[in-house]
Image (cartoon, rainbow, N blue to C red; front, side):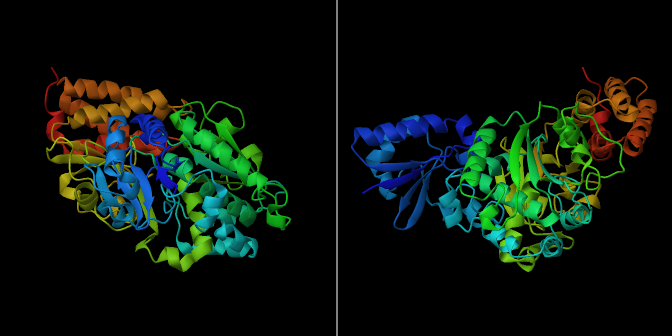
Amino acid sequence: MTTTVYVPRDAAALSVGAESVARAIAAEAARRNVSIRLVRNGSRGLQWLEPLVEVTTPQGRVAYGPVGVGDVPSLFESGFLQGAPHALHLGLTEEIPYLKSQQRLTFARVGVIDPVDLDDYLAYDGYAGLRKALEMSPADIVQAVTDSGLRGRGGAAFPTGIKWKTVLDQPAKQKYIACNADEGDSGTFADRMLMEGDPFMLIEGMTIAGIAVGATRGFIYLRVEYPHAHRTLEEAIARAYERGYLGRDILGTGKSFDLEVRLGAGAYICGEETSMLESLEGRRGEVRVRPPLPAIKGLFGQPTVVNNVISLATVPIILHKGAEFYRDFGVGKSRGTIPLQVAGNIKRGGLYERAFGLTLRELLYDFGGGSASGRPIRAVQVGGPLGAYIPASQFDTPIDYEALASIGAMLGHGGVVAFDDTTDMARMARYAMEFCAIESCGKCTPCRIGSTRGVELLDRIMANVEREKNLQLLQELCDTMLHGSLCGLGGMTPYPVQSAIKHFPEDFMRTVQ
């Protein structure tokens, strides 16, 4: 009898020894003359349990973790291939509390399937959305996405259906789909996890988008720091072509869609959509002046849908199960689910997909388990390095776009970075300004010069050099950057600075030694 054993090939799991664990399991099985089928799946997202090893049993998949190479002999000795007890035994995977309490839609297959096995994908309703889309008119596909309430998961939260409708209505002969996979925000890893754990989901979503708006070519703009995702995507795209899910005659329908991966060069600014388009065209990544919008004049001057990974990967669910099904999750104008990535000073870091509406406190303590240091969590930064710092007094804020905006924050890509009460928030404000100074494309003065002057002002404030005067000047500088910058890099840098001053003024009153 052959037992299936799952060991993640996800980058996070590999970073803590998953490759060595996989080799050790294969070697131990051979030494004991035991037949196993070793599947390299994606990560379940419970990062503190990686490497998380699973075995298939008559009762379901049983999990063990975190597994090290030294644990492998004792696992075999205890009978882990039959799901037997062991010090690392976690029980049935689906019953692990941190998975069971999630509402996984976009990440339903991540960690479950072999990422590059198309038959495995199909066995779990893969391409069901595309098959439905192929029977619909482009306008009906766009309407379904609009009715679902899906908003861009990359930061701006713009309604996806409206963007698609704009591209659909353009009369151009050539249109494009551009997937922004330049995931550069601190504490974010949802895009990487999905591309490494369920790449066909993204491919299917982009194909549906192409059919919906009349685009025949697509590009995945991938950050160069994601080599594992790159290899996985290339392998999955090749298999999709082999089986007729990409190319000139998709599933015999006469519809065409070609897809390729392009690598960025490590510039944070290329996460901004127009800078990404410049880079895709072979130029330096600089922000474009808008209008015209990319939906009207985008890649190579043609109408272009620009969405991020999670937005596009969510589309197959909407087409498969219906707009109403997806819309029934969430609250207010924030519909569906959001993959929240919890990092920083946190006990149980990882990815948690839940419907909009849970609070920051629930996320940080019920899921995250509080700080890793055991000290009180003083602040969280939501939405990447340019997100506002939210104090503990606001942790009962629901996680949805409007609720966070009401307290001067944003959700962005769903990254949540925790800081305990030893963190100097003045230094964190300085970091935001320095980050902007380093990553600015340099095209507009408020961002290019303002961020550099901001660092200088913060250094003076912390050194108690004309503190009150410089605090006032810093506020004025932030207003200039907020209203005068060409894109969100300069325009959002004031968020962490102003929120730190507002909520943690005492940190700006200390003198740096």
